[in-house]
Length: 171
Image: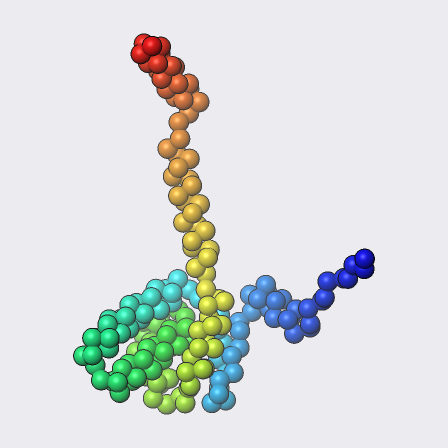
């Protein structure tokens, strides 16, 4: 029986992995010729994206109820993607506060960005999200709370003595 050596990944895949490990920004080339840089998403950016999604869910509800026409629904969806793209590209509390309202309009009205471009930006930004670290921190803090509420050895021994003495009285 012949044992084969595992295949080595190609050079491009190794470079992509190394750039991720080195925390380098990802450069995405759009169909309109622009190149955009995506860095690690800050928590405020994740919060902004969450609020944009909630806002669009309300619009989606109106679409499902038939209260919005198809043309308006398409426009709102394109605006939704422009807003998320703007939040990803700004990625800073001050920039989001001062420039977000104009940035998404510039992306929506002047950049000729396709849905595929938006999806590529969102896909790459997802790789730069720090949500797993926040979830891990939450799990650790919950574990710490459990540890703080644990009994000391003396308390546990006293509790067991009381349990055992109670059992002896019942028999």
